[in-house]
Length: 233
Image (cartoon, rainbow, N blue to C red; front, side, top):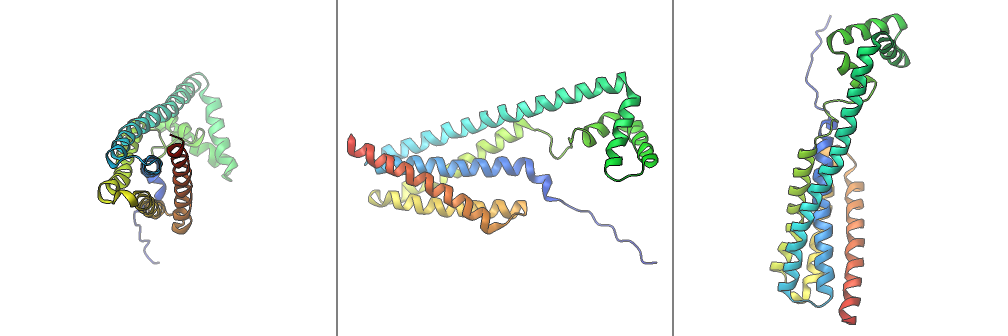
């Protein structure tokens, strides 16, 4: 009988917490800062004014991303804690019902009733709350909310993303600023989409096209508005 060779498996879902915040932060950093720069440049502002506006956008955007992610993910964490507290009370007040409830979950997954009850009993004997959190509430260590991690990741990646179009302001000639920033930012977005898709195991071409399209649309709209405002002023 051949020996069974066991090997550790690393699933991509374990990356979902930090990957979402990282891609969102970097994407927002590139799109919002590049759009701001292109809009101000289209209004015929000086290079120093454009750079000041870009730096202000970087700082404000990074802080906004951090605060938004922290508040949003904290709300998720509060909801998880409330569900766990309620489940703890139910386990204390009616353990028999909770045992049957857990067994019913396994039965719905095609486990025979008698075996489902045995499994539920063994799991609850070791960690009743953990068993119900995972199989009844759908919570796990991988998907649990981490507000501070999400906030720091979003702020850091936003700043990195925003620094890319800002660098173009420094190196590009003023008369070509709109085109250089737009082209470079779209290239950065395409690279970000490809990296994010590769890290998450998604379709690289689809992800790249998605982020590039929305980035181009954002920059085109702000450039148009900046040009109109520049003419009007």
